[in-house]
Image (tube, rainbow, N blue to C red; front, side, top):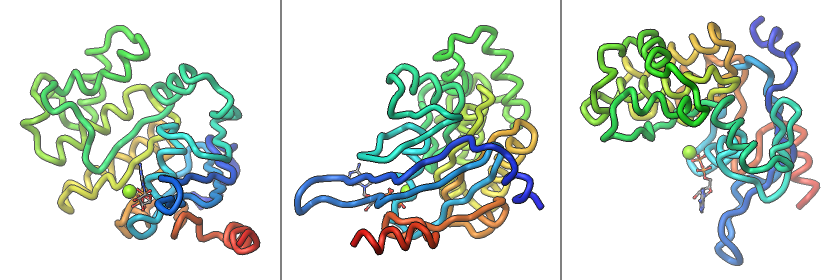
Length: 241
Ligand code: ADP
Ligand code: MG
């Protein structure tokens, strides 16, 4: 039923015929070969596929962290390719949150300094209060002034989730968020992501090798060799060869 409800929502994000090649000439590698995808507001989407199939590349394009060679990325009606860099950066900071397998935190900075970064960029005041509220939800309020380097992996990923959620984003992108964690911390991090979906209305786009995590999403799509395993795209790819 969850899936049906989301189908009735408008798209938060869509991509059309995305292509991305790394390197040139004989070293060229076609990481995305014409990917089209629509993601509904509040949807939870799992992207699965073998290592090297293009999952992270697709996630980076969806989140505006990298630009495609061709094709379009549309966020709530705005075409990323037609926006100024500053406007794209603003959307990425304000409306998107990111969680990565290797955390991407400033290890020598405190929890507060890491979590408040998106608020600083957005020039929000009263940041400590907001950071404390977020950390409280994630069970980390007592670590606010500790350096990230001293935290466990599970705690680090919760700090990353706090940073991802602090601006109340429309979409949270997670690239193998449980990949570095033991099963107990992995389950905790998964629960927190779905809680953000339910309580804060964030769409989730999760790249994962975990069947358990993928099965909790309302939709699962597979990518192989830069092509989504959807009949229309496989047919289009075949016709182009
Ligand atoms: P996945 O996340 O599914 O493991 P990626 O999207 O990271 O795969 O990578 C897909 C392919 O593109 C891989 O073969 C990878 O080596 C290549 N690739 C990704 N990023 C770059 C880059 N910046 N430069 C060169 N090759 C890259
Ligand atoms: Mg990857």
